[in-house]
Image (cartoon, rainbow, N blue to C red; front, side, top):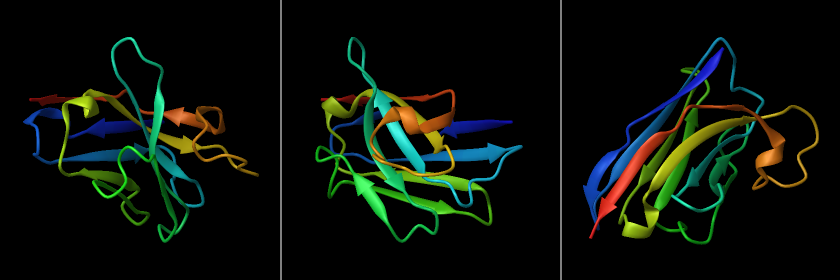
Length: 125
């Protein structure tokens, strides 16, 4: 039972990367899927989330217009397309699945009970 994040790497500022999150042993249908990131010396922060059917999404202000979150429930995967990357985007990126039930705040890490291992994204200037 796990979430496996992949697709990280080293890219120059202005470049793009696509992160993927593959779920095995659990389903993502009927759950919010989100991406968080943690830079060295900083707390983990919310990046983006996609709700059950994928038609509703949320983004941190810092990534709006540059990142796009998506999901494919038939393949049990979620993705994060990152464009116009900046050095400030450098971090370990984690995918997460929400708990079931009422979700008061999609950006709160406390509502997610399944986490992937993280994938490193490094953006050089």
